[in-house]
Image 1 (spheres, rainbow, N blue to C red):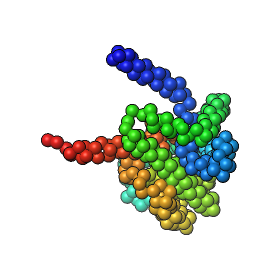
Image 2 (image 1 turned 45 degrees about the horizontal axis):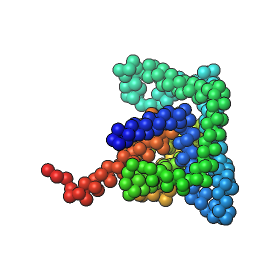
Image 3 (image 1 turned 120 degrees about the vertical axis):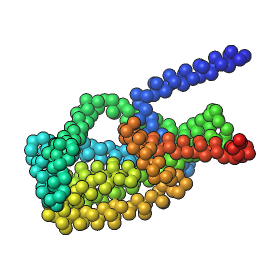
Image 4 (image 1 turned 90 degrees about the vertical axis):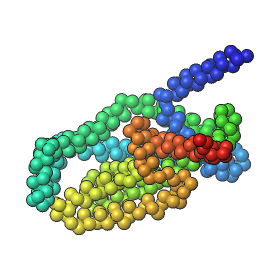
Length: 352
């Protein structure tokens, strides 16, 4: 019997690893289907009740609403970012935008002692620093151009993954309760631990996606509209960049509006610079403090340094999926060790 049980566990591990390997090529589609199902499931429940328990109809309508409210607008923003970034790269490479001239204008407006300091940098002086900065911007522009080309080459793969996500999302809505019960029953943990981990998983996903994305969109929208009204182009690109950068705690949209304000100030547009600083500090900067508590909730809030490290690390490791997976792993890590600490305290605390 022992041999049979050990053999069964080995087989269980092997088929689980094989199944994971099968899912890896489309893990993003599976992951975002789960994320959208968790976020919109309360809406599905109310819709199902309103339709008299017609699960199929409620699931289809939930998928369509999710598609129209979140997925298609998100794809539109991403496409706009690629298009605007590609256009900026083409203008820089063709000479319509002269980065060296713009940087020289900034340096010439600085005090003399700062100009001397820049000239004496160990990196080889201001000229070398300027060339590195220009090269970095060109690499960023070529990245957008490459993404546009890659999208055209892998359109079939994208639409397959997109279709799989919507297909899976339908079944997660319709059979979500049964699937959650099956996971809870099969998990090799106690009922209490399984329930707490599943609740933490759902709450962190809702907080990270619903809260952070809404905040980021608001900050990017306000920043982009401000740039457009002031004639700072390309306003759409900077606004979308602020949306993505706002997902990174502590720095966020300031990585766009602070350098822009500095450039405008040193080149003589003091009024525009002052308006951007005022909007950045008193509007964009305060949105996080006003909207985060009701959208995220205190029970799911991680320390700021943990959010920053896990978000940046997740994005570096997993790309755009990392801004959800990173904080999620951090939250589950903290939850697991909190449960462990409680159990040790319940068993009499730490023994010598």
